Amino acid sequence: MSASAWWRACLFTASFASACASQAHDFVTIAPTACLPVEQGMGLPADMTPYRAAVRVCNIARQSGPSAAVAKVRLLSVFTDDYYKSLPADAPWQNFPLPMLIDETGRCLGRIAHLFPVDPPQELTISAGRWQRGVPHELRLAVKSPAVGGDATLPSLHWNPRSGGYAAKNTHPSQDKTSCPPTS
Image (cartoon, rainbow, N blue to C red; front, side):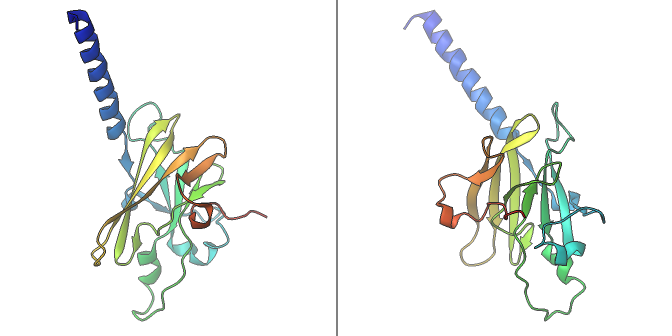
């Protein structure tokens, strides 16, 4: 191999490694403490309406870069701890709706197949990355659990520009819990 071919190979490898490293570092984790109560006038999906006082809105936005602080995707979620904090200790567990990803207009982009941030005793961490024009093209889902089964990684959700929503790859439609509810 000539010296110039060797340098080109090294430069290509270094560029590729640098691109991969920057790709891995552009993921941001959604902090439950940054999620806010829904505004009184904000419409909610019918299945979340009974839990309005415990529903939180989480902006999903880059923390730096050209589209920083502009959330084009938001997460609506019933915070189960907030729901139960004013109820008796023996209150029955509710069948809470799954968290919903929405755009700036409130249109559903998909659902998360696990309650966020807490589905006792488990905690879900959501990391958003692979940003394009302020939209995360991948949502990574990790469950921390003190139970016997331990921690788990759920299938990532990927942005589909054709459908304008998120879906898990390689998931059979009958197993997909991430699709949006039908609209009337």
